[in-house]
Amino acid sequence: MRSRGLSLNEQIILGGLVRHPTLNDRELAEALDFKLSTFTAVKNRLRTQGKYINARVPLWGAMGCEIMVCSTFHFDPLEPRMVGQMPKVQERMDFPEFIYVVSESVHGFSIGMARRYTDIANQIQHLEHSHAVSGSLPGGEYRHDLYPIQLTRFHLYFDFEPVFREVLAPEALDALDTGAGKLGKRGVRASYHPNIDASGSNPLDSLTEKEKSILRGLIEMPDLPYNHVASKLGVSRQTIGRLSKEFESRGLFRTARFPDIKCLGAEILGLFEARLDPGKDLKKREELCRGIADSQPGFVLAQSGTQLMGLFLFKNFDACQRMRSMASMMDRKHGVFQGEPSMTLFSIPNTFIFIHHRYVPLVSMILESR
Image (cartoon, rainbow, N blue to C red; front, top):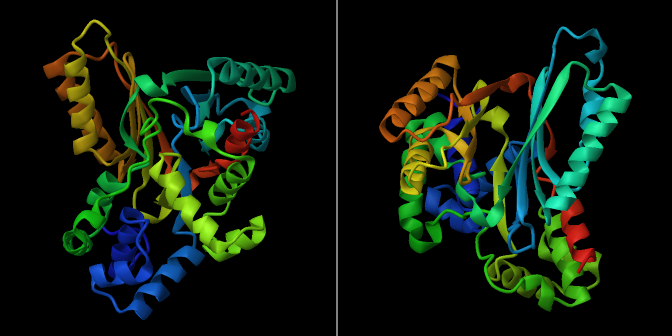
């Protein structure tokens, strides 16, 4: 299967950029066997066309967050009052806690983080009340699932490697694997799991006000080189470089690149949700979830003690059905699902990501509270 509209060189370079976000252009070009000028030209074209974004991903556990919330909303497509209401639905979800929000014509979902249960509970209550009063979600429903960050196993967290294995050309995958071999330890893929390095004392407690300002600025301006960030914040480039490395080593954020899901050649985004039987052995629950993560083209898969949610990209409906069949077959072996899992499908060409890895509002709120 060929990624939509991407040449072989673009697939290789996009894959390298996402896999190895901390390497500079020269290092990646050498590893992937490109001339630096060719690599830079393709990279710039991909960035200009919006095929990927740069990000510095907060590790939310280290930021003091306790809860991840996954919310879904559905409404009756035959409800005439829903005509023209989607912008209002999106507007009312514009809270700092929501970092990733996706919608289609009849449903949507969001991923959010919160410092305390009370924070997200208040936002949910306000959200549902505003929709009820305005009538902007007639004939519809919300559901919210809470995942305690330190008690949740993140098998995948915006890790696109399983998706690449499904959508990139075999030649592109071979080139990426060869490049990773050349890089050695530098070729290890980054991980952005929210609960990484989050044990012990909170690393924010020791930051000065100036360091907090720089931390916020680095997360806010991932596209800018250090000298531009330094100029905007009124400090030296050396200070920005030193603190960026320090913040990353202390587990406050990770440097990342994320691909645009619309350029990867998949037709369907699937939101998979299941209830897990708490009476079953925890090892069996983890084995089933790990099996799904290892065998399917997902990029998010979070498992708490009693629930599971995942985001998957499928090239067509048959691939989606095969994933459902595989999950059912694995459950017959492990017997951990309570009831039938659900799969909400989104047509990728008609799907809009209207909050896309937006971190600054929540980070600002966290830093101002400390």
